[in-house]
Image (tube, rainbow, N blue to C red; front, side, top):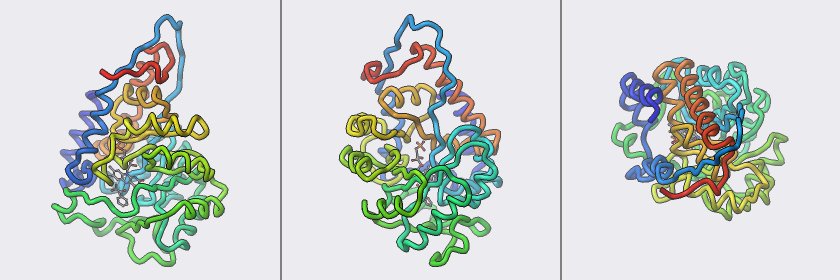
Length: 330
Ligand SMILES: Cc1cc2nc3c(=O)[nH]c(=O)nc-3n(C[C@H](O)[C@H](O)[C@H](O)COP(=O)(O)O)c2cc1C
Ligand SMILES: O=C(O)C(=O)c1ccccc1
C-alpha cells in the first residue's frame, strides 16, 4: 500500500476508540467480501500502451462515497471532509453528523446527497427538499439495504447507535422521525424510484447495483447513473467483489448512463483498473475516514492528493489511455 495511506490508517486506528474503529473498518458476516473487494484488484493487471507521445491529463475520476457519522472520526466531522474535497464530488450521507446545508456551505465543489428511502414517504420528501435547498447537485438512493447488515464487530461491542452528543443531523425536526441516533431503512421498489424522480428535478442515481438486469432496469427507469457497489462488504457476505461485478454491468448499460465503482479502491492503480473496465469514476469509502480520523481536513486532503498523484502517474505510464483490452488476469 502507499506508505502515506498506510500511515493514515495506522494513525486512525491508534487514535480512534476501538469501538468506532471497528464500526468503520468492519464488514458483514465473516468479512469475506470486505477482503475480496481489495483482493480483486490484485488479481488483475494492466497492459500499458506505448509510444503514445506525451499525455497531459488533469483527470481525476474519483468521488467520495457516502459514509456515516464522520464526527465519530473527528470533531469537525463532515465539515472537514467537505473542505478537503476540493473539486472532487462529495456524496454526503443522510447519516451525517453535520446538517447537509452546513456540509454544502463548507464545500467548494459539488455535493450530492445520499439517502435511504424512508418507511414514511413524507420523511423521504422532507429530506429531498433539505438536499435541494442546501444546493446539492444530485441524489443518490442506496438500494442495497432493504435491511441493515449484521456487523459482528458492532454486535460484539454492543455498538448500535450514536453516542450522546452526536446526532444524525439531517433527520432533526422532521415530522415522523422519532430518534436522531439511528437511521431507518426500508425495502423499496422501482415504483418508489419513479416517485422520487417525479418529486425532484435533481438527477437521481442508484447506489448498490450488482445484477446486470437491475442496471438495465435503472436505465429504463430514467436513472442518471449507478454505483456498482456491495456497500464495502457491509451488507451481504456472499456477493462478488465490486470490481468483479463491474464488467457485466458496464456491458448491460452500454454507455447509456455513467457507472461508478466503489469498494476496495486503495491506490491510483486501482482507480485505473476500474476506469479501464468501464467505470466513469471510482468511489472512495474507508480511506477518507482514515484520513479524517488521523488528521481532520488535512488528512482527507492527503488521501485525495496521494490518489490523484498515483492515478495520473499510472495513466502517464499507460500512454494516457485505459480500456478493457488493456486488462488481463495475472
Ligand atoms: C463506516 C461506513 C459507513 C457507511 N455508511 C454508508 C451510508 O450511510 N450510506 C451508503 O450508501 N453507504 C455507506 N457506506 C458504504 C460506502 O458508501 C461505500 O460503498 C464503501 O465504503 C466503499 O468501500 P471502501 O470502504 O472499501 O472504499 C458506508 C461504509 C462504511 C465503511
Ligand atoms: O454502516 C453502514 O454501512 C451504513 O450504511 C450506515 C447507514 C446508516 C447509519 C449507520 C451506518
